[in-house]
Image (cartoon, rainbow, N blue to C red):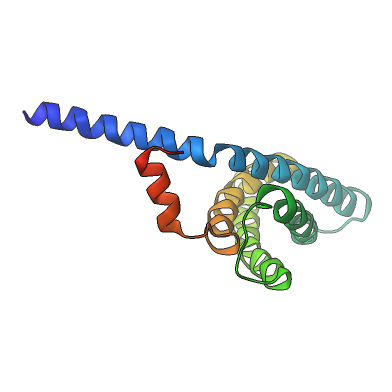
Length: 164
């Protein structure tokens, strides 16, 4: 009987995971596409600042990341989360988004420094990994605090009931 219960629990967890991915899938794709546009902004600026301007790669990463953050907020606010009606003003959301993404900046620059100084990976290659790690933080924080669903409990009820 214990084996059947484990199999049932595994099937429930697998089904729930599929519903969660289905429910958030298109939003995550849009977030990823916006992130890709931010990657282009980031890479263009870091290349220009380091390659043309002679700026230190870590300082350039800070400036390039902030420009990408502001670009990404604009696209996420109007496209990725355009259907969410957060209870806050635009100015509050841009400040909050920037705050959470600056946390991502710290994560990104720390990752970049580790990969370039300790592992001697070229800064442009290391930057891909650094941005990827920061993206996980950025999506999670901003999805639940900057653009929250009308109620996380409502989100959860829809997913668990299988209405997603």
